Image (cartoon, rainbow, N blue to C red; front, top):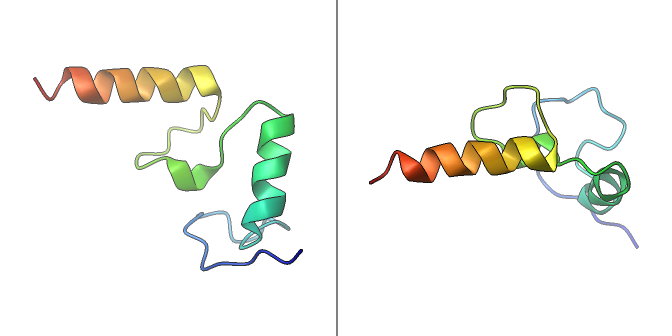
Length: 62
């Protein structure tokens, strides 16, 4: 199955750039998240890091 889209990831040199199905499978296997899910990329792509990012973001909205 071909799965290609206009990719918002800033890592244009990545071999999976624009191949979201392949990219998501890779990140699932490495327990990390793709750059395209981060509004402010700090370099920490772990699930825990993303949770902390969202927690801070929503706590500050109150």
